Image (tube, rainbow over all chains, first blue to last red; front, side, top):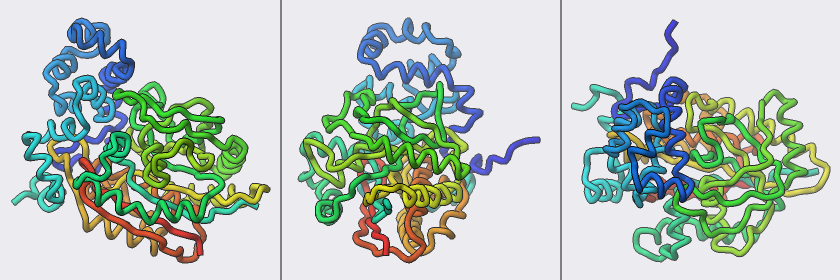
Length: 129
Length: 280
């Protein structure tokens, strides 16, 4: 019997549940390894070679190389783990979050200063008028 | 006997810690945020706790996917600030209170909450940013701290109802400790924010302020709110707010005294909420 996952109809949102966590184990553990300065240096020196040391899927590796965080999340990544890639790239958390919205950095920052993304129209897929 | 004298609730946005560490709190962007904590810092000095029981979540720093406990209580002598990938924050080592922590663990586990006992753990911004916001820049934290880590990263996370009942079990545990300690319990994280996907940047002022109202006046009712409602209304990371219910559950049943209330948007990606409640 299927489990109840009532959060599936929230737009632009992937909940990191046990199923996603299983898919993303190696991807997220690779991210975790970037907390060590020596690993950050090795990754930066040859990203592909470093990724090949991890039993990740080819799709996961390509998403990391492309810095496509939405794709990484679809493939089991979690934002707190993925933030270690952003940290390695010298990005702030606002830049990391904004990079997934399709907005420019300036537009995202301006939206936050103006009170953030409104809830109206963003509760349920298909709600937007 | 020990008692819980007060509870504190605050967001733990990492950028607030960075603003303090880099001396940017006077900049126009940050000034209103830090102004909102001035009254609480004065209150902390005037009403110093003997121990802070600090409920927070780890953000993939102490716990990797190798092992994520749902509820973990720190029973160690001390905890180092974590290197989250940008270098550790330049803040003091956090001293623990192993005796009280072990007592609470013993009592709460016998009360049917399956805590994981932790004796070695670094603490990330989830714990150190609230300390910085309430204590300022200091050479040593003013009192021992018991870190209490809750999983709100890997779903399913504990429900608000369970968190509230856990707070009640912590209240009983503290009350049965022989030494006359004044314990403050802090609930951290939130308020509305989403850090992932095309919906990142979500803020819901109406939800947040209603949450603050109900946390003060109707915590038992608020504890019934299902997960999906937090996620839909307050963003995927807004679920951190369940941790505030642990602190609230540890308070007496009588209506608390509201010492301070503050709300501000934004700090980086997040709505900042803050409450100080004293037991009546």
